[in-house]
Amino acid sequence: MERRIPIEETIEAMEKAKIQGKIKAWGVSNFDINDMMKLLNLPEGHYCATNQVRYNLGDRGIDFDLVPTMKEKNIPIMAYAPVAREDRLGTDLTKQKVLLDISKKHHAEIFQILLAWCIRNEHTIAIPKSSNSEHVINNVKAADIQLTKEDLVKIDSVYPEPSVSEPLAFVVTDEYGTQNER
Image (cartoon, rainbow, N blue to C red; front, side, top):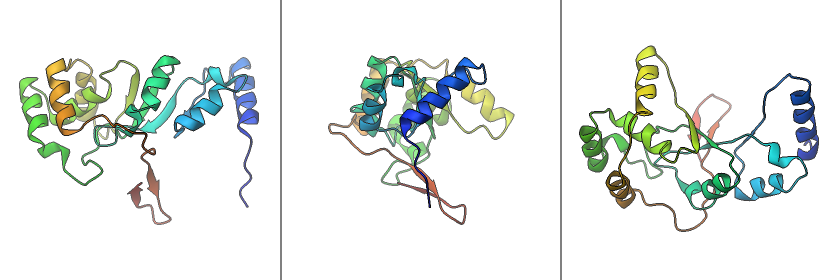
């Protein structure tokens, strides 16, 4: 049977580890807006250094409420899967004309544009997959790409910011090691 540990106890343990010099900071993972607000209303909740969530052009539901709240509280988002190949409908992002045009304009690979979009607000830390040195170099170069307002408007025309709150996107691994998105 799973034992659920109250978040207050977890925060207390993390703060103790910080005081002991065992960790520099702590954060949370997959906290939606309601979870974050509960956390931030706890006495030591404001010590949270980041919230790691799935965030990319195809999974941008958090742009409605979580991203603005995290920015207001000065807590960065840590985006996992920031360069997902497909959106929620299964459309291949690497074949989207608007993204191809923007990548040509910036003399960049489409994955660099997807990563540059993810970190465009300077309040998001992205942790893209880096399976080889070429990926690492391309990921670093993506940080130098400055998408223009015009680029962002074009991207938003195809992948608009959500107008209502949406549930977090997840990648869940089943008992066979297969990853499934939710």
